[in-house]
Length: 475
Ligand code: UGA
Image 1 (tube, rainbow, N blue to C red):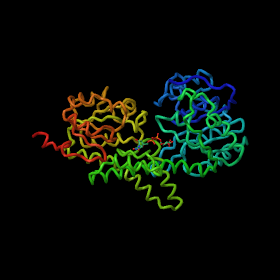
Image 2: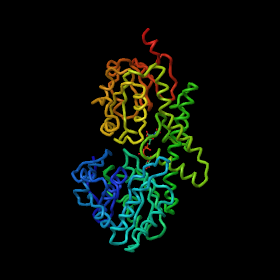
Image 3: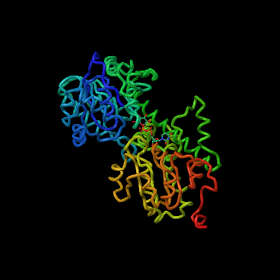
């Protein structure tokens, strides 16, 4: 339940947001929640229509309620008129997509067209803040683009880089209680503008919708003021390090499988070393989503343009890419042939708490299984609609239990909490063969074996008793 109300004594700043994806919507909504006046726009008019009607084009926990409240309070609105959005804000946040090009570089065309629009439609000076993850030096290029496109008008644009560190699924919390706020600026005025925007968050001077006004447990964020180049690099370095940790955990998992050790125990022990820490060390099917894979790729390209040997991060990428091969290779001996086998997939989203399937491991897995003519049936609490657009012909089930019906194997691909508490006894009865490949180590292998399942997790020793070949099953 979200708490209601803001401190009305605060100065309201006028802010426009370009791009109503995960980053833009959360940024705009949270900035209105802390008291600013915000207008959001997007080139996708259908998205704006949905938002104007009170709908949400994405799933993000708590966001719909927060949008509704701020719209009602008159602090947040949506418009398809991008010129109007340009003129509204004294500060404009660019939160548009920067998808990877086939060569791995980030595609900056959306940023370029927003820059042109801002330059042409502005009627006054603006602070333009780049929040999308962009290659280094984009801030400088953006500054030059604004000056070039707007040379006839001479409004004077300031540019800043303010990378976001939001995680899908917990984005509102991450925005309102960040660990750090990075301000990449080239002058004091710009720094002060951004400090004013973020002041309520830095001073924790807002009624928190998550903690119902009691945020005493959460630390204030550190504000890091730096050059634009450094700010852009911080974002790349951060996401690439997270990717590196995950691939490292997956490497350890593979070694554990080969040498009959238990990765869960290894990780638990190494995580107790404060120099390593417990986060982003869960092995499994690897990292997906729109951020880690593409940012890693773009960072590799970036390093190479600076003549730096990026083979360390190339290996991180390779380990991640091979997770699905490895998973299917593990399933094959138990299933013998995949052709004609009914495989149930639990989880499609790239991680729990989101409907996002961009670069999700589930997609590659479905492709592989279909290539080998397996019959695929799937369930996800949020991501089915998005997946239907890519795979219209696989079977979409209404419940996880339906996925189990007649299945020769179940594959757990996203670690949604609800899968943990399924009636596994019933699942076993529904399956044609009680065989589970747990790609996220969601379940307890011993408990599953005790329930009569053949169970295989990631990087856990596989007891002979819990995994058989089809020939053994028949005996
Ligand atoms: C990531 C970063 O965590 C955010 O800080 C950043 O702001 C964001 O990218 C971005 O650049 O916009 P997000 O993509 O929402 O956030 O997802 P993560 O929580 O980082 O998870 C990424 C992937 O790694 C998921 O597929 C997840 O399943 C996987 N993962 C994560 C693991 O396989 N193991 C882990 O231990 C942790």
